[in-house]
Image 1 (tube, helix red, strand yellow):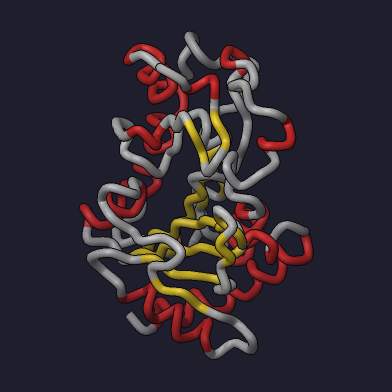
Image 2: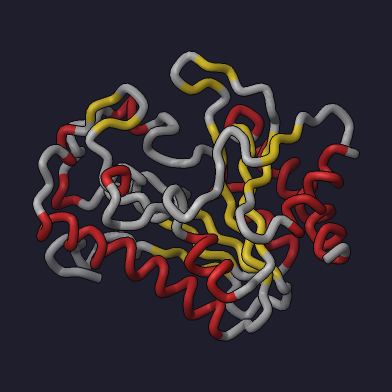
Length: 250
């Protein structure tokens, strides 16, 4: 950890689960946590705003932990808030340390100079992605699954889908899972909506999976469906059942 930003008693940026897991799947959760390094205070953001989707992917940590256990799959969960540094963005883009998220100003990110941004990268972004790299290096041919969640309403616009799959150069696994999800009762399934997966908007899949030619899936689950333990367990069980079936179609 970077002594300039994280104290020795603060949480590591990456929580690694089941590094020796037997599954071919490797799970990542770029926005699992909402911690803020003590040195940054509260970024000028209220506690109520830190509960919202602008700070983290609500519910995805619980789904990922349960899915990791069900599949015996390694998983890497990022501990710190996306408002400190977004670990699914190229670190040089403005949205990596956003000055405004949705309609909320982030005072602690206003006018950050290069050393301040570099300290966040060194303390959080680089160790998190190094943990992913280490697991991929030990697992040639693994299947990369990027776990995310999305708010049901963004800028007053309702989002009707319950779940979505995102893809760019290699849609095979995403399309296979989408077909299986549509066969479930009552699910509205999106493809590349409410977000698109691109080299500019994402980091994990383009850098870790596509550059290696790995099969991958970027998954988005609507947050109101997984904000409780019951919902998290339901979605983890569904994915533990469907992901191996989707992989079998590759």
